[in-house]
Length: 151
Image (tube, rainbow, N blue to C red; front, side, top):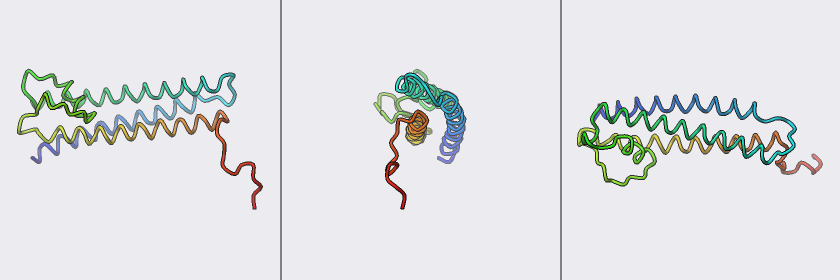
């Protein structure tokens, strides 16, 4: 059981590293893609958000590939099982149950799901932060109390 935790933790840490790198890239891209003045601010906002979402989705796919490779290396399921599909189902917490892990590696599924939930939440936070920063840079946000005099 300890080996399952060690392998699962190692893959999770690698995926967290990938996500951290993508976060830095996404924030850098978002900052550089937001001009102070644009003729179509809403269209620009949409393009920034779509770009960041695509970058995050690519990151998730790479992370799922990491899990699939791990499943393949440790023989986590039957030899004829589609490890990429199995990794997607676990990472997204879909859990069809049509592929089941071998007994020796049954904890990798829940560890994959924990990793996926964490990184999906992280992606949502990135998207929200980019949205707020982009709206702020484009002057499309209203600040509460901005028109009230300070006391």
